[in-house]
Image 1 (cartoon, helix red, strand yellow):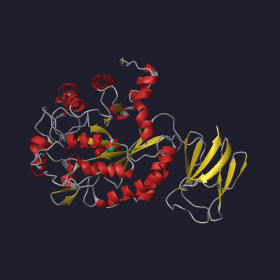
Image 2: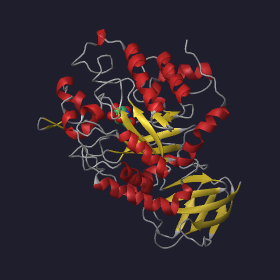
Image 3: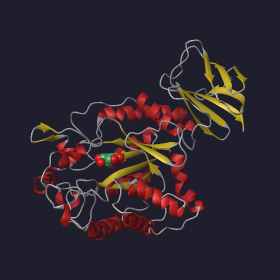
Image 4: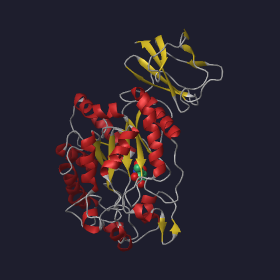
Length: 428
Ligand code: FHN
């Protein structure tokens, strides 16, 4: 029987308020795998670069050697936070410990950490937390609570350890929880903890959740604390609520239609989460804006990942795309921050999306009409006024509404080829 944590909807709403306003955040995958960068002994290893130890079955003793070379002298927390801020991102989730088990923070519970095992000797998470605080960006951690290829009792390493001899409960209670205590007491207010891959049993997932709540009741917890759908369903059936604060979609999964509840899409800018020297498949600013908008239009937040190099540098093409997103948001942010999912039905493959806020429907046009007439369907309210969001004068655009169909007379050329936002002010 899963013990249920009592909480009112109001308490939950209070915790989630900033997150529902923020909509767009940054994730950072950075660890020893950033140094191998998708290569092992001169060979390309396929897949996400942060998985290299598992993909190439690298023994712990061999993989550990990377720490001696990990010296990210180019790391500057303020610069990273500035990149996020200029992109219009409102919070950062940085890797504290990924599946490789290496701790990117100072911890008493293992020497396998960036301060004790590398020539760098600094705690980048401390610096990031401070830089975020100075810039008004919220800060949180990714922490792999189950998969740990380094720890003898962590899950996933069958090439060094015998699973039958492993004791996961001991690992959770004597290693994970003490480390979480460090992370939740030494780094100021923690906006979010991003667990991943699920905790093996619902009892342990609830124990972990309770532990986080006791240390920092306002920290938002991702649904990957319990990835198993059976655990999620059982908890919901018993408590009438979700085990976590919001549901994490699959990796790079943009919902196909509007979904209820708090949802988040974690997405990559190129293919791999962590830096991979030969992964050049960077998404453009235009693609990222359209993904951000589509995610919000369907009811989710968008958490976009960057993978800095082992030198501590966020790759230039990535910074360039993020700058482009920021430029678009500086003009059109009103349609994103605090906006909700589309109140109108949008069939798949329609070349527009819609976000909404306080009596305004923001129509995001991705493909401009050749005949200067843009038709929006299923508008369930009376439209009072229409204008381009980017137009500082909010000059009226002509329109005609017949039932749910609104046909808008738009300029000849798309004012913004990425996404022009047309505002429909409606009678609510
Ligand atoms: O295995 C990880 C992966 O490396 C990455 O961290 C992503 C981010 O959502 N999560 C896991 C897979 O779902």
